[in-house]
Amino acid sequence: MSDRLPWLTARPIAHRGLHDGNRAVWENTLSAFSGAVEKNYAIECDVLISKDGVPMVLHDADLRRLTGTEGKVCEKTSTQLRKLHVGGAGDHIPTFGEMLELVKGRVPLVIELKGDPGHDSDLVKAVASELKGYKGHAALMSFDHHLLRQCAAGAPGIPLGLTAEGMRDQDIEDHFSMLAHNIQFVSYYIHHMPNRFTSFVREKLHMPLITWTIREETALAKTYAVADQATFEGFLPA
Image (cartoon, rainbow, N blue to C red; front, side, top):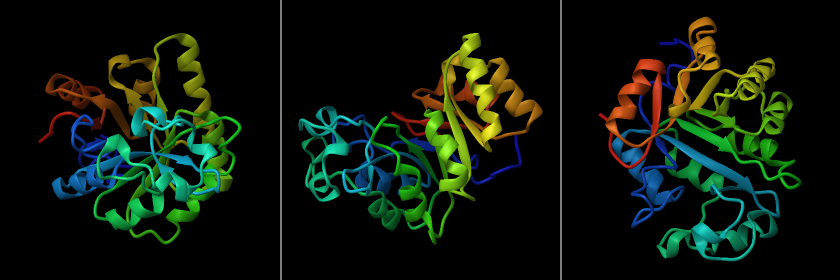
């Protein structure tokens, strides 16, 4: 196990908060984040940016699946988005600032920057601005290479991770290319592991390696054989 960023790998990471598969407690809501804090799990969340430049906690750029509303996050202001209920339940779409105020540094945060090409140029700086002065552990990560490249200038000093998947040679070479951009950890799809990229970053670079998304105990056992910590949902890891 890597000794870098020990807080990142100290406890399982609740994927989009501690939700129940979007039955009563929906993903990326304040209720899901409260549940994770109560159980002392770290939290993974997703962040997009609104029309007026406010980071919003939501996975999808399109609003239909989670709110039943037509349109995209980038087309609506933060005030309009906060009025939308997630899954028809009591929770609204939270701003990133609301989430930070709720968690208050009690558990670590792993924040996935969600790309929306043509509409995400201010996302990195907006998230970094919200994190200034935050009293708690937090890291950024993304699948989107263009966002990761912005982080050196836009989010200096905040730990940065590559979210990734794939086993094809081209996938692996693309991942290796991102090591030139101050990547400090990797989050990888469990069913595409191990591979020469994940083995290299863990065994040669001694970089923290976490997995996504673990939904059963067998995959959890595999995680601890090939990585340092799990991002989970659908059950409660010990």
